[in-house]
Length: 231
Image (cartoon, rainbow, N blue to C red; front, side, top):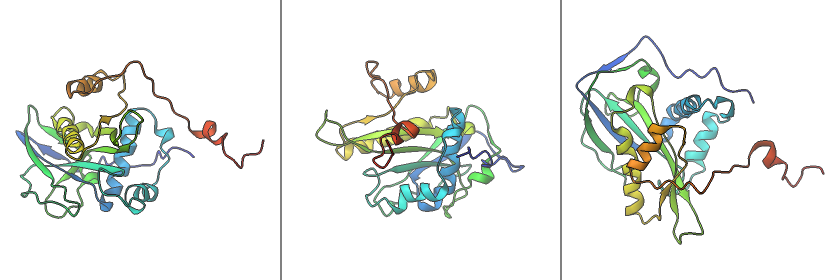
């Protein structure tokens, strides 16, 4: 499959400029957010120069996250989104799963300019807001524990919204919910070449286990094991 090089992640003549203070709301993703999630996933593949590995469609993503996902958030593939706005968000109320969105204001050291805002306008009708980033995670299991943990698959913010403190808000929210819900751990892969990311996770309390390396069986190497493959 050819990489989806035609994906438009949204640079337009419309720009969002925010100075002094930016308002953020962290909430669970909904099915109506799939188009935004799809573009954010593509952007993180761009960031890692891995767009040739991006195989999903909006339909397949929607099916994985919502349509074939019977378990509640945190107990199944889950996306948290951060929306941003130039004005305060309404007082949060719990969603249908019981999760209460988190709203927070961040003081800006420099103005934020977002030329992708039109493509990332939030679908939530209660406020003028834009999707800034996501966290993607799901339960995992290990012979080291008698309870499931949380696998923190990825954390990503669009370029305009990095280094503002929103990543700390996102990770701490996942970790707090993992602790409150009785999960055994929060773990994931840390890119050793990305010093800022590496230092971020260490600063958040993550123990880096240098004695282990990440292994992956996929593509042709995986299909070589298929039962119906001719010998």
